[in-house]
Image: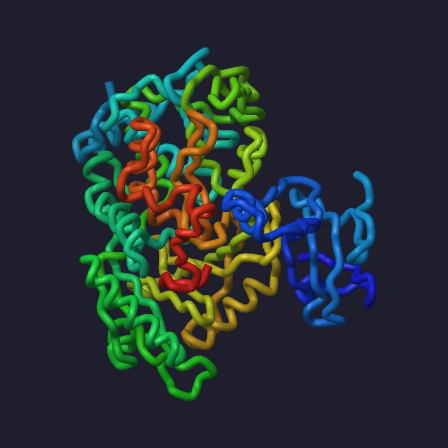
Length: 91
Length: 417
């Protein structure tokens, strides 16, 4: 349980938000040309990092907007929050 | 030579004030090389080592554990054992484990306190009723004992449940697996450790894996905090930390690690003599031999390795518990904790070879791995020893995420994952 600083609404309780998993997984540009292995990689395989991870979050019980977060999964400390489409901060 | 536990050894040691019991397992330094190394000294890892030694004559093996054995999810779960899964592959896997549980204390000469007190799953709406009836039929076709109970039969089996029709989620029925129940989780780790140690397995605690050495596509050994260990076979049974080990080998797994919480109440006299689970309201409860109510809550929905969890998850579970069991309204909760569970997209486990020769993964058990401990160890040992899966774990390979042949137990099993 922690507080999240929504880029649109400000600081709110984490339970207002929905975690959307790993960020910056790009949808394949040519889906018809993908092999089964590449589909599996895109659909299922995750880094699941213990440490600093880039994630998507949704303010589900607030403005309902998506945004990105950099969070340390070993202690739930939030390092940075940035809007969709913005460049991730360099680590 | 390992002394056998018996009533005679108990009396003998009582006479010396229990000060001369033989150590249950040694504390060896790692050798330079082993035929196989198991990463992770929880129940599944120790069981794997035990069956490798016992059934496949692999005695020059080691279990490396970063903390102490059984100190991870083995000691953090709610100890429920059942096999009433919907799909054939899961039914085969979990019932294999349940059959081993039934003789485990005798086999290990260690009392794992396996108690077949039954597990009851409740239905709260018409879709639950249909799903549970379907699962009951599927279980019976697979030779797994299952019965469907009416609301009156639920009340008769567990009288403290509130079956009033005007509660928010009324009890419309339930299923019962009588062979299901609970076991003492620590004893399972200790019993397997003692059994494996007696057959020559080195159990190396406080030894964290820092890297996996590869030669091309083959495993050559592991780097640990106690030095390099050479081995051609590495079986990873690291639960919530499976992805961390996989990343060391340059592999990616279809897993997300999340905190799952549980809590126990103050101890009270016997009040509930079975295990009751509710999928819809996500509440399950049993009573330990010490008298504590053992309550399982849900997972948080974000990746975290903190072994904590959010308060609202516990609050939601306790709200449901109180509606189903008004008699518990003045119970005080004693302890709460979290464990990190590795969840697969289809909520089924992975017991599999990988693209790297000699590297095997046993992971993805998510919120329900304890029940499978003996079967998981047995089948994973078979997979490592023969470099081929057993027919019971063939469906639980990594390649299913490529082929699409998933074992989709999400919500289809007896409890939501």
